[in-house]
Image (cartoon, rainbow, N blue to C red; front, top):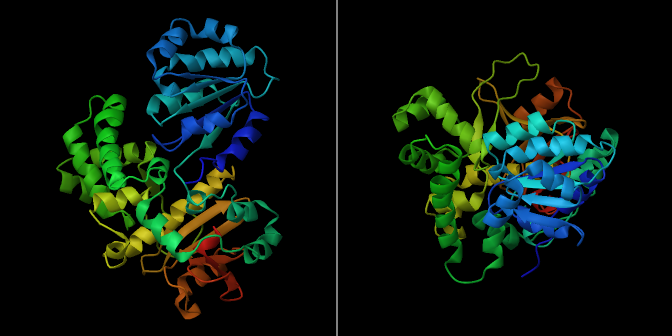
Length: 411
């Protein structure tokens, strides 16, 4: 099996040239620690989950940084909040020097607060995730995201020039298995299912318990199981609260915790100018398709193809791959979904320097342009540069004058 090179290496090295501190944030076991191995050999790494490293720094973080003023990486930095104020003081002693420190961590309220309060203006943030489909089979570039980063007038030409990088069988395997690195590197039978089971257990009983000690773990465990059935749907917090026997604010808090800890992705409703009445509820999905299929007890890819969740699962997996690629390329963007009260909807709306890009997601190879009314109307109303349909075609092509069909295999 191939190695562990990640698309995030390019962004990490770029940010080290721009900022004194780089923070690599992402879910547990997505590859943050492994990413640190791409740093030059003179860098030193301290793991704050290791008692000896934690004690060496916690005794006096300021003195430690005076003794180690550059080329130091702190793994799982959320375990030592006092480190961040000490980093601010040390960085401010020489603001012109770049690339001094790297911190990694899983999301937590304390970590996000420490970064925003102590390191604002001093830190570049890399939001890391499990493999994209292309990464799982060895790619270390992001051509779709790079096309959006170019001049807006050239986006259409760049997208039409993309080439398929994956076979249908590779796409199906990735879709069913998900993107967490460790199961991809392990060939023992049944390892993936056992790994997923342990991951979910550790997420609730270790990670969430440590971050939110007052949380009712049994209720939250039930909530995590419920998320699998909600993946890819419009979310009504009041309805979810009633299902769990908790208040609407508590249900909302649960979703914020799941989103902030990278288990779930919440897509807010599109808030742009429109004359139509819109559904204002958010949409959401489990970020990793492999975890979704594990929680739903779908045994194999053949069963997935006939399962009721097939459509929402495919849509969510494609959206997650798009957003992971944009994050890995360091492209600032806003993501939302669009649904009018009359039923018209667009699966994903991206907003950035490239303009407003509506994206529809289809599992089929061929798309009837006559069934793209909601997308074409959105393009016209919002004066978008173009609309995109992600499908399983053999190559990119224009579906209408304003809509590009783009195979998922190009991403």
